[in-house]
Length: 287
Length: 325
Image (cartoon, rainbow over all chains, first blue to last red):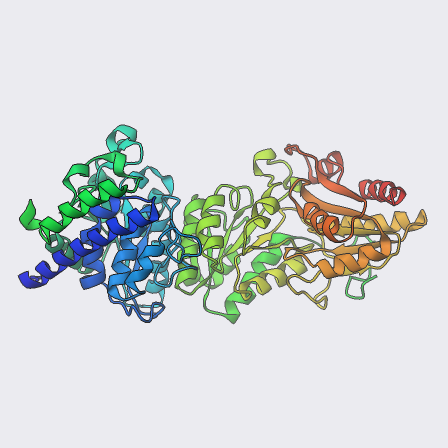
């Protein structure tokens, strides 16, 4: 079941993840606000999707057979924007417009503004239902594309998520793969202090989901998990991706205070230095 | 009187009575037959919302989500995003009541053609009491950009509205009632979203109504005529986009207005009319509707009477507003 990916390919993806992190810090600095920790932690997963996993045509974002990548926790959109720009959806230069008046790169992503953003999101807990709706429709019509839904762990507090999880389990939506960014932080503290979530595996299994847990900062491991999910035909799959919030910038890793703020000039300078000196050694080798 | 109204319109004893939700059920069948993209979702209320007729005919296109209105809105947003034409069916108190934010973000802001059917709207729900009597749903829906808001006056119009909504390519709210109400329009009555219908012409006052209370407005004209007041009655089935042209043309002639709806006066159809008149043609208005209170248990007649929404109250309001000209 596990597909071997060539080491060179992984190395290239890791370098891309580092490029995305660098551009992310630069765009957040220019924007003056936005979220830092989550996007850094998810850089590897976005790289895996946009540069390896997704069936996509960046120049034809409405191509009807594309895989759908739904971002439920819209606040981490800066990393999606960076990945989309590098994948060819729009010019990298446009990243400078993040959160600025008239931009297509809204503070929280909007479907109507930027082609390729599949759903508008920000208010938490409503991505999984939309992903399940798309998957249900696709299944009705025997469409082959896959639907992915990225969620945060904090948004598992929301009831809507569990309603959607029940729905997907009931309807055996095997074309749906959810990915939970299990980074243990949310805006005001640690997830287990604010509202304990564990055991997430047992909960999703009880809702008739196939559950895989991976190191979400290990690109090879993550890609293998997504490939495994494709081979599960009776259930939707959730990949609980354990990630390090702020990954790549050791001074902010695991610090929930960095959930919802952008770096200032001095901080950005230090962060970029840290990222550049590690050049590509973000995941496996660096641990 | 409009020629497409039934002939025996004031023969209250012999008029056919049907709930507007029946029109929804029939409209779904028609739309479903016309277009395979039509899918119907329900939150454990298939029979009460009359979506069970669709379920019986097109089981493969009927989706039961359980008692989960928030999820129903998001699932429907996903289905519409993919290319389906989803109708979500529940009581208005729960949808668009409970799931308002999901509708705002995933349907209106996404600008997806999900059709929200709110059944059991108004105090005429009756014995179920205040929790189940939606009186704020028009207000909730009409403040959302992109959303179309329709409140049909009888079962026949409800069927036409449902069918039309299936193909307008917009997020749309459809409001239905639980109880049987007079069927006073005919199949031949034209229906176009956003086009209000003048049911009776008059020169002294314009009564603008929506939902089954349109019939009460027509009943009021009988008494008013005897008192020497010729009332114009507009069936304002589409609250958004509002048919400013028809409303302004009528009010220019009559110079005063009574609005009639089974909804909170604040934020409802009357408010929408007042906004247009305040800006274009300041006019005295009286409002028939809920006066900032919740409903309660009782028979529909008892409740409509207690909350002053029947034809004698409309007559009183018309007399009052005519004097304010």
